[in-house]
Amino acid sequence: MFDKTQVSIIGGGLMGCGIAQVFASSGIDVCIYEPIEAARAQIKSRVCDNLVSIGRSASIAERISIKDDLFQAVKEADFVFEAAPEKIEIKRSIFSSLIKLVRKDCILASNTSVIPISDIADGFNFTGRIVGTHWWNPPYLVPLVEVVRSNQTSLETINQMMALLEHVGKKPAYIEKDVAGFVGNRLQHALWREAIALVNDGVCSAETLDDVVKNSFGLRLPVLGPIENADLVGLDLTLDIHNVILRNLNRDVMPSAILQEKVDRGELGMKTQRGLLTWTDESAAGVRRRLARHLVSVTANLRD
Ligand SMILES: NC(=O)c1ccc[n+]([C@@H]2O[C@H](COP(=O)([O-])OP(=O)(O)OC[C@H]3O[C@@H](n4cnc5c(N)ncnc54)[C@H](O)[C@@H]3O)[C@@H](O)[C@H]2O)c1
Image (tube, rainbow, N blue to C red; front, side):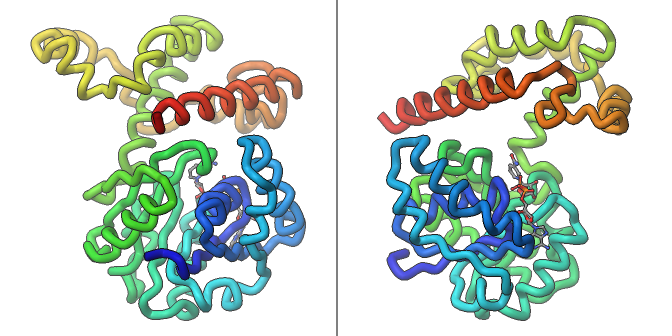
């Protein structure tokens, strides 16, 4: 069904390369549009390294072509995935160009992490064919893609996107309402807000906070979702707990002061060796290796 499908990706950075790799690995031709020369130069080696790291042949990357001209990149596309920087002005400018350049039956998807799809598509024609597809890093290892329906997206578009993603081995999750952050990032950042607040308030050190998560409920999450867990412990106990805890949880509507101060000081995390924790190149590489090994092993188990 998707043998002759053409996929185009807008933005050949971390996510664009990973998404391209997924389609190329399933035998689908992919074209990446990347406007920055230095980024274009890295695409092939980035994809080849990622393929080799998971035991796949680097020759799969031959199905990926790279263009610096948007029209040339998208004119034949059946599906376009935008993976440009997380700024609404950039995304709206890209979609406003795409609408004029693609075929009328082409489906346009944004990989935004948190911006509502209706905000990106607001005021454009073509909105029935604009959809959110929120992939997770690295796209070639994490199975889930949230497929987000805006108030304009047609059901036909949702169905075609779900079918394409299933065809390439992903686990698409249909998100029926276009809320900021969709489902995954709302859950993830509710946890991060509380985590940063607990460290900021001196309740525990940053290292201890991660130890608590990794050695307790974090262990259960791959096999027990929060809804299953609530039913497992019993809704009566869940109610008793919520009666005490909810009013004590952090409810700040702006980012934590500690986060703003660190960003202002240029302490951005692993890339500057200082963030909420202190890093060396070696310790940062160790975390990335550990994560890749873990994802390869758990996703292999999920496939069994
Ligand atoms: N990094 C993640 O873990 C992650 C996960 C899920 C979703 N996302 C989302 O995916 C998108 C891309 O994130 P990323 O981490 O790959 O960023 P990135 O910075 O690695 O890549 C973005 C690429 O877009 C290119 N670009 C800049 N301006 C452009 C334009 N006008 N048109 C086309 N391309 C342009 C850049 O040169 C760069 O190569 C963002 O919306 C981000 O929120 C990221």
